[in-house]
Amino acid sequence: MTDLWNDPAFWTVALFLGLIFLRLPIALAMGATAVFVAWYWDLGVQVMPFNFAANVAKVPLLAIPFFIFAGSIMERAGIAEKLIAFIKWCIGGATGGLAISTVIVAALWGAISGSGPATVAALGVILIPGMLDIGYDKAFATSVVSVSSGLAIIIPPSIAYIVYASITSVSIGGIFAAGIVPGLLVAAFLCVSVWLTSREKGYLGEPRRGAFLPVLFDAVWALLCPVIILGGIYGGVFTPTEAAAVAIFYGLFVGVFIYRKFDWRAFRETLSFSASTTAIIMILIACGGMYSWVASAVGLIDRVSSALLSISDNPAVVLLMINIMLLLAGMLMGGNEIFYIFVPLLMPVMRHFRWDPVWFGVMATINIAIGQITPPVAANLFVGSSISGLPMEKLVPHVLPLLFFAVAAMALVTFFPQLTLFLPRWLGMM
Figure 1 (cartoon, rainbow, N blue to C red):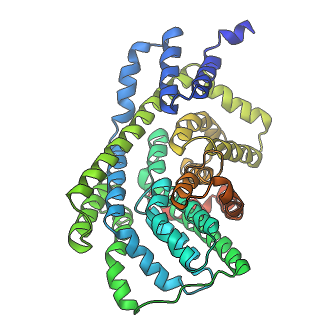
Figure 2 (figure 1 turned 135 degrees about the horizontal axis):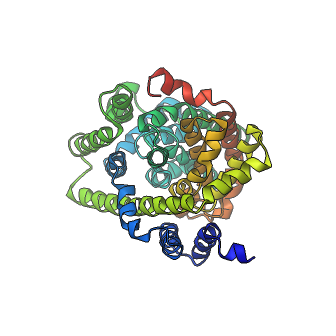
Figure 3 (figure 1 turned 120 degrees about the vertical axis):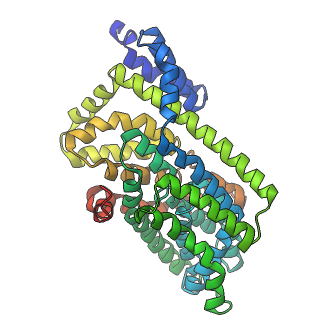
């Protein structure tokens, strides 16, 4: 017991959990724990300010504020409305057509937003009333929007991928390319779930309104947005950071001159939102980096990896344990926090089994996306609940079938890494 009380690795975990229990924000809990352990055990607390600054002084991280700003601009510019109108015209007439359209629009919006809760907010105010108008159950409509919005962090560009890349030093462009097929796979599985439920409940489609060409021409500027962002990255025209900057100017152009829904008031509001959101993420990155450094210095990372490998040396068993651990973590905290807590601990395990870090990052991100729809925290469900006015417990029965299909898609990504890796390899990005 004496050894335990004098063990800095024990206190690195215990202090962090204690501060979380006292409801301190996760970023501050990591930072305070790191500073105390470095000071008390004389690990070089004087270098902590330099460590704090170095964690955020990375050029790839410039993409984070740019993508947040771009997503906020495009939400206010009316791009979501045009995407929804086009997809509804194409698919809305089928059984469960509007619910299936919701999944597809969420996947397309994922190539613009990069944030699950923000996607729920952008799409929910339009799609939930739309489904109610043609007879969908309110809880089912809210659940479909909330769950499918999790695609925003799986389909690139994704802030979660940028954070993961900053921790593991993998290529941002490479992990962006790797996320496309798994994201579309999860979307396809969700579409199947939605269609089965709609057929059982008798949810019919919505009749098409208007001719195809006018709807297409009205939506073409919105449809070009993900093409420009992702096509520019994979075509080698610009880097992910430059793509985010291009997305800002494209969104401003479309919002001001094409759809004419973006004014100075909207600009100020999006700028304020983007600055505050970026500040929160950067503080998390800085404090998370300090915590990871201390965890490595006191031997916590080696102990956790050794403990995992001592349970089993079978990669399938270890993968199953890691997936369960990440799913449970996703039920309690946000994705970026999970990356900074768990990824440094799991990197020795990755090296032991020679797992590709790009594939591992996509798999971990899918876990986090599923966690965003799983109580008790369930950030996506919380936003959907606030839009629809329904308590979260009313949504859970409708979420469970969608959750089952999402986990099935994640299992395929987990045990068939080639689904994730073939596209970045084909594009020469790995």
